[in-house]
Image (cartoon, rainbow, N blue to C red; front, side, top):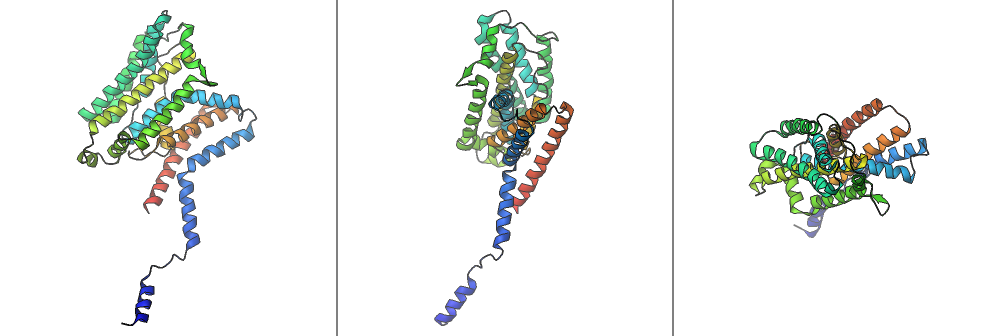
Length: 339
């Protein structure tokens, strides 16, 4: 065979360059927009409310959004870890109320018990989450059923502590927990930001975070690979409960009282923030930073609609549409990535 034929053969066998370069670029842009859609929506919503009301884009209102988001954010963070394992935690709102009522019952009339009461709130949340985790991991009761049962138990106990009524008349010092300012920001806001930073790094940089993804992605494969699946499951529910306890402490301190219905509906809002942030309810996919975007989209939307005096029932309708739209977009993005 001549050198010329070898050369021709090499040229013929070379991979062809894609002729539809412009089409490929458009597909890339479409995928990029889909993956970052929530960030774009947050920006678009903020711009709209800034134009619609001069009271929205102010430093005071931004602080209001952050303060309102803090206890809700901690619930959403815990829910993120649970959902990443393929589970769900419906009990966090009631656990929040139980933690708040427990701490209030301890501190009412006894300001010297503040530290004990604060620790009790966190401990109650941790224990409630731990019980749920143990039942899910070792008894194999589905997370939906387990946490629904814990929701009822925690709610009943919260009402029992206050004998069906809120606990008022807490010491004024109790309000220092939520109202103390550090570097011009209230303490709960710093706790929220610290929580996102710590869990964000944990999920992205530690073996524990990688194991959570592994359990949610394929539990059987994770077990074969040596991951202690039961320990991981128990841990994420315990963390979720602990964060709910901290949220209960913050809310109780903010209003210097506690009510057995405190935190009602928080579990649904937390799930919405996680899903809107791009996490899959099947587990194994999602990020803490996605939850942060979902959280601030919900909080920005609620705040802006309040400023525009939109009735609460329409806010609920809009939130529902937003959740379904987020899941639909996520499914489209997943199919595009798979293709």
